[in-house]
Amino acid sequence: MDCYEITAFGSLVRSTRPDPRPGPFEVAVRLRAASLNYRDLLVLKGRYPNARLPLVPLSDGAGEVRETGEGVTRFKVGDRVAAIFNQAWIEGPPPPRPRALGGDIDGMLAKTVVLPESGLVRLPDSLSFEEGATLPCAAVTAWNALFERTRLRPGQSVLVQGTGGVSLFALQFAKMAGAFVILISRSAEKIARVLPLGVDRAIDTERVPDWEREVLDMTGGQGVDHVVEVGGAQTLPRSLSATRPLGHVAVIGVLSGGEVRLPIFSLLSRQIQLSGIYVGNRDHFENMNAAIAKNGLHPNIGRVFPFSGASEAFRVLESGAFTGKLVISFEG
Image (cartoon, rainbow, N blue to C red; front, side, top):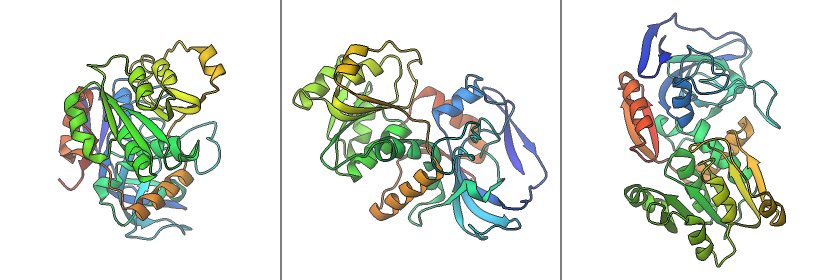
């Protein structure tokens, strides 16, 4: 199969391997599209824990079943599928030893992959392969944060940070559920791009650096019900200040660093729930797909690259000069 192996950032070496065949209870998938996450950049730079380099990058991909191995019952040839992020996490609590694509094991930047049938889900019929490829990491993470670890209800308020994949999926899911959404970003241009997705209020943090105070003003001094926290060290204390008593903060990202000083007394006295979110399991993915199909939701794609443009896609990811998801189409 044609694929890419990581050697160092900016150096993705194309290699040719024998076309893989599925064994018992395995499925060969002809990939049609893949998408990038910030995690992939950390892997590429050798800054992601437990990543085994060199490897085939990317956790997110979608395609069609090309061949099934003996004993496979979940899928048939021609089915449209996506792979789950952690191939070992089917249901319940996370396993002690993860098998995350593009980190623990080879990922999805390949023309054909062979995976256990248990590690795949069907795509909603309403989505293209490019849209389906955006789901496994960012979308499942946002879904888990708002509907599995907690239960977002109509009329509640949600704070999302920035205009990356997780944040925009959280925005779309929250609006789908009838929530009031506040978005913060340090780029007025990016705010303007995503307003059509249904943002109720937006805060330009370049103009309003103490944005947590603005959030309190917007919520009558109470704070929001839920925060999708992707910033890390510089944003988490402010997120706690912007959360109502008994509210929920889903901690997802470390964009501004991973070591945080927390206002413990405030956290305890207001009884805020902190949840660490690391994507989700297959059940979460399938629950999310059902909601996507029922509500006609379409992922927000910022830019599509050809398979030969994988290196350029990583450079754009590093630049941060985009909104939505960066997708690689294998048809180009």
